[in-house]
Image (cartoon, rainbow, N blue to C red; front, top):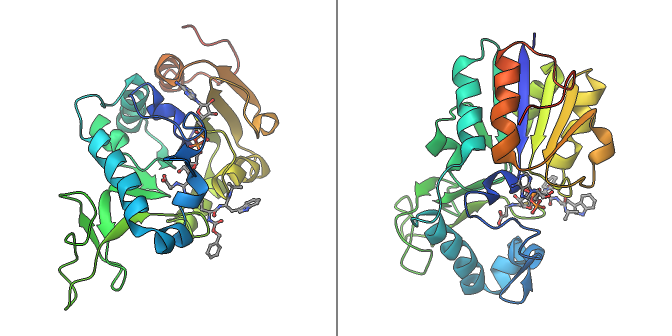
Length: 244
Ligand code: BV8
């Protein structure tokens, strides 16, 4: 039935794994708006504050309280069993898709598990929290690693690959995203323009809700496994309610 599937995930797919969404944090962290902390200006203004923001999220990610949920595993199962093309584009910086088994995956907003040399742009797996002693090994003198994160005002990763996939897709599914951050929030318009079926899975009806042809309201961990089974059974999404 479908030949080219693109899936966009947001913080909502990791909510049931114990990671707070952006909006759940009311956009605030240590009395700073997320937008202030997640910007190059915020980093230049208070490097230690921004390092604390990312180091604490990195430490939570590696705690016992966080692990993939059924929605992550269902997307990995779809990648393994689907005989067409599939790409998961995630706005999330956690590694829960990888831990669940997804490989055809693109982190358009970067990765919490990596630091980046500000000079060479080389990335390094994070082995300790950010700080003055956590430096690159590619420069002399060594440079203090920055989070390998796309901040507001910075260009997301993989945009050419993303646009190619959106141009070809016949099914676009957005899971757990508020549709408030661009360019990700505009991907549904591109999918609609190219004639794809557009489907949304969300607890609520978020900002770009009206741009989607089908909407499934509920938790990603409940809906996505059934949605994946329906796709693998060759069903047309939206032709019948999801049997939860
Ligand atoms: C760029 C890394 C250009 C940081 C992030 C005015 C209009 C339009 C655009 C702009 C504008 N002003 C500025 C811009 C551009 C800006 C932007 O969009 N700003 C917004 C605030 C208006 N965008 C950028 O700056 C982007 N870059 O445009 O570059 C450019 C061009 C040339 C050269 C250079 C640059 C870069 C944006 C990337 C920012 N970085 N993340 C970090 O992670 O710390 S964005 C960050 O916020 C996340 O990555 C994510 O993308 C976003 C939060 O969105 P969601 O993932 O959707 O999370 P949220 O909490 O909002 O929603 C969760 C949803 O899940 C909810 O709907 C909820 O109902 C649902 N949910 C909850 N639980 C569940 C659930 N659903 C299902 N099941 C559940 N259990």
